[in-house]
Each structure stands twice: as structure tokens, then as C-alpha cells.
Image (cartoon, rainbow, N blue to C red; front, side, top):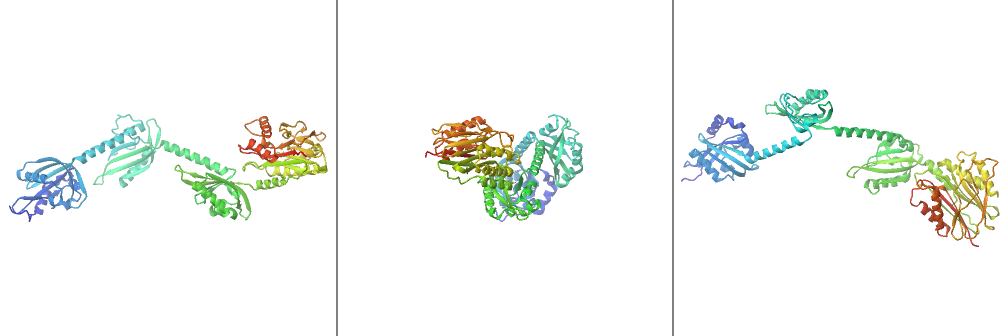
Length: 626
């Protein structure tokens, strides 16, 4: 036999003529169809098979376009083509008996992407050539499986999914869509059209706008409504898809609607919440500002503007650092950096701002950070409250409190003062130790009704007046009687309570008066405690001018002590006053002998575990053993 090469090539004109006349109808087949022409060697034997016709489905499987396949040889272009199958195809050409077979096949046509599958092959002779039709049964099985999965999804989803033909007539509505509008599972939809299950306004949008956009762009999206058969409108997010054919005409319309009832209710609740926040934000009595993570103002309320004495426009333009006192800038920046980094959940401190005219403004700044569900910081919330008056009151109050106690022979005196929590306004608690004529010593503790600068000013006036009366050598009862008269002329003096006593170290005589104040606690030399009786009158300004003020006396033995205190030590909202006085008595009975340590012990026992809403002052005197 002569060698296989050189091959005798197929006549292209003859092959294309055969394909054009006989095989044009195969172009639309979903299966692959090719016409193979024999390529013979010099001896007439079939050495290869060349593509004389290839339909679109066949080209999709192999990769190249049909025009690129024409004239190419099977064995040359498909290196993995089974020799056994080639021989079977040649046998069909030579003997005329059709071939039916299946095989698993993987290959790559002349450098194109690889393809694989299980193919059902039918081959029969057509003229001088061979018509081969093959179907990728694995792809078809996969398509059927995918179709089944998609069908299951369509029937289990709660969304509305429908198909309408090119005339807008509904041909399918899934189970979720039927439930949405109250249709029975088997209820007939023949004759129903797109928009029939929508309120009139939504139907008008679909027919006037949505369908035109879908035909032009392929899809339309928008918020519309479905209409339940009971008349209830259901807000939906709707998509309409127009599927067009090669001729540009619409084949069908697909509509998907998602029930947005919960989302719309949540949006309404959010809007209401935002409105409540806006009102609370704007009407808040303290300054509130929202800042981004770079520390720039996003929003401030009117109270913020009033506190720092700047307009909203100024604040938005300048930012918080520009209105911060230069000496407080670094501390403020550091606090914000720690807050954003999550090192602290919030912070609060007093700082200075600079007003529009360059004046210093004292304020208390509190800040926290808002974080999202993942813990990431989103924005800062800052609150400012002017404390200029508080600082004046604090300064005035502290200037009135004795810090250097006088040295008195034969007597030990100790004092302890604890201010209330930072958010508490300055109260009117005060005390004093006064050297008196004749080597006596006067001791007073009191509490002015009210808070703030008015209370501090009243305290100053009463303290000064008491010192003046006491230095004249008047007895405690006469001193307090004069204070009653003075309180009648003070704006805040009415209702002030105090205990005033004087002590003579030589005779150890103690004279005392209480004007509506808590009882003096006595500690004997053995450590037994009791409250001094008698000598009680009502608060200042509540005693008639001619009425005497009661006074009592007591001789203190060496080692004995008395304790004076304000109501901040013993008053609690959850425990009655009598029980708290008993706790004070027990605490003093177990206290150390040294007075400073004893006062620290008492305050720790009675107020160490609570937030103090009031100032606390304690003053103690002990007779030394000479």
C-alpha cells in the first residue's frame, strides 16, 4: 500500500455546496451536527475526515467558530480523538450501516479551551460524506438537574415570581406569589395580565413606565405594591425583566417582587426614632455635639453654641480644637485618641474653651464613641456643660473652709471634708474653728439650704457673722439667736442648720447649741458613743425674735471627744435616717483613737461604697490628758 502522505485534500467548493443545499435545516438543532468529508491518500484509503459543515451547537462544544472549523481535519485538530471511533466512522462511509454509540471524551481543539463530557453519537452516510450528530448527555443531565433546583427555589421562595408572554398574559405564578396576594395554590390565572394583582397606581406605573424601560434596557427596578384580595396593599421591591429573541421582539416577561412590609415598618420606626433623637438633641439643656473620627463637628445643638459662645457656623468652620484653650489642647487630643482606639469607653474632665471675644470659658466635657455592630468606631458624641458658676462657688466655698487648724493647748482638733460627685453642684456645707477670748475655742459646723453660688455666698455671710458674734465673747445661745435674726434678711439663709459650741480647756466645760442640725456624737474615754441630748432649736430664721434659744453644757473628761458632721454623711435614699445614725455611732465606736484616722474610718464605713450626691464635712474635738 502506498504511504498515507501526501493526503488528497477535500474539494472545499464541493463540501460547502453539499452543506448549503442539504444541511441548512440543522443550524437550529440543540445537538451538535457536523458533515465530515473523507480525505483519502494516494491509494484511495480514508486517511482523515474533514469538516465540511458545522452547526452552531457543535461549534459551542469545541470552542472555535464554524467558519474556523471548515476544512480542518479531525485527527489533525483533535489529538485525543479515539482511533476506534475513527475506524467506526470510516466503516459507516464504506458500508453504509449507521453508527449509534456513547463515550466519555475530553480534548482541546487546535489550541482552544479544553472540553469534556459524555456524548451520545449517531453517524450515517449522506451523499459522499458522513453526517455525525452528537449530544452532550452529561450537560443535558446537568441542565435538567439545574432546572429542577431552580424550580424548587421558585416554589419555596416567599417572593412573587411570575412569567408573562409577549402579550402580557400571565402563564406562571409561583406558590410564594400566590400566598402574597391570597390566590389559592390551584387557582386558574388564565386571562390574568401583568398588573392585575397591583393597586391602580402601581399598575399605571408598570404599564406607563416599567414595561417600556424593560423592553429598552432589559430590566426595570422600582418600589411598587401588590394588592391582596382582601384589599390590603403590600409594599414590594419589584424587578421586571424582558427577555428578547434574536429578532429583538420580546419572548416573555419575568417579574420578581419582594414583600417589604417589615422593612417599611422598620424604616418608619427609624424615622420616628430619628425625629425623637433630633428633638431631644436640639432641646437638650446641655450642649451636645456630634463629631467625625477626625474630630470635626458634624452637628451641634443650640445649648452647645451657648455654652462655648460661638455660632453654629463658626463651630462647623473652626472645629473643636480651634476653640479649645491652648493649655488644654494636648490633653483633649490625647483623650479623643484613646477613646477612638478603644482604650477607654468614655471620658469626662473639666477644660477651658475660648469664646468669640477671647474670654476663657470653663466647661465640663464628657465624650463617648458610637460603634457599629462590628465594634468599629463611627462617630464621637461630646457633651459640654458650663461650670463657670460652679467654679466660682467652689472657690468661694473653699476660701471659707479652714485648712490650718489653730493649735490649742489641751485639745486635739481634726477635720475632714469630702466634696460631692463632679456632677453635683456646690453645696453649702461649712465648718470653722475659732480661737475665743479667755483661751476658749469655738467650733461650728453648718449646712446652708440650696446649692451653687447663692448657697456659697450665704455660707460666707453666716460664717463671717458667726465669727464676729463669737469673738465678742457671747455665749453660744446668744450667737445663734443673732444668726436667726440675720437669716431673716438673707435670700438663701432661711432654713440653714448648724451646731455651735465653745469649749474651755481650763475647766473642760463644753457649751453647745443646735439649730435644727443633726445631733452631736459624744465619745467617752472608754470609747462608748452616744448622741448629746437637748439644746435644740429650729433652723435659722424660723425662731420668733423674742424667743430664747436653748443651750446645754457638759464637762468633758480627758480622752473624751465630740463629733460634728453634716447630713451628707448619714443621709441615704435607701436607708432610714435613724438606722444611719446608729451606723455612725457604731463606726465611731470602732474607730482608731487618733482623730484624723478616726474621721477617715468613719467616712469610709458610711460613704465609701456609694456615689456622693452631697458634700460631707466632719469636725471632731478631743480633750487631751494633761
